[in-house]
Length: 170
Ligand code: ZN
Image (cartoon, helix red, strand yellow):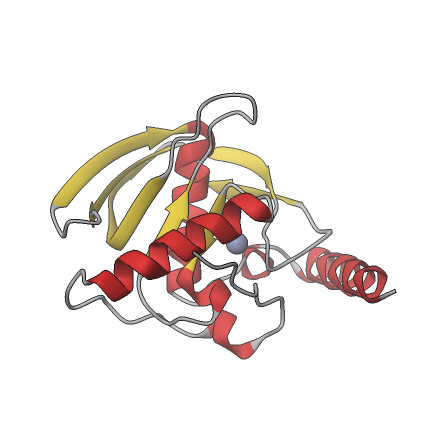
């Protein structure tokens, strides 16, 4: 396993659309392992392949409480097939260090994806898991949290990220 560097806004790969995975190979399973390790180390609740510079339709999520057993969920070629309701949640993103913003999403989603053995599964989610699925799925389409807010909040997020990155360099 290896920790992967996480790209931060405004890296152009974050704005790129990821390609479907044609076959779930050992290479993909290794990528998923490394992404999970990177997400846990950050720490974060979700990580999309774009964020580690790989334009493949893969993301990992674990929304288990810090003191609970981990609950890693892996989504390959995910597709959100149903959305319902509305939920506003204060979201953060590993590519936007230091920033958080209220973002409106569907309250429940049904997602279809491949698992690590290449089998299709469906999952219905609500709450934080539904938010995370929508957030990570956006990454695969090159859509970022900053794209979901108005101009003033865009500037605020940009400033927060620049400040956090400057502090990290000190
Ligand atoms: Zn994110």
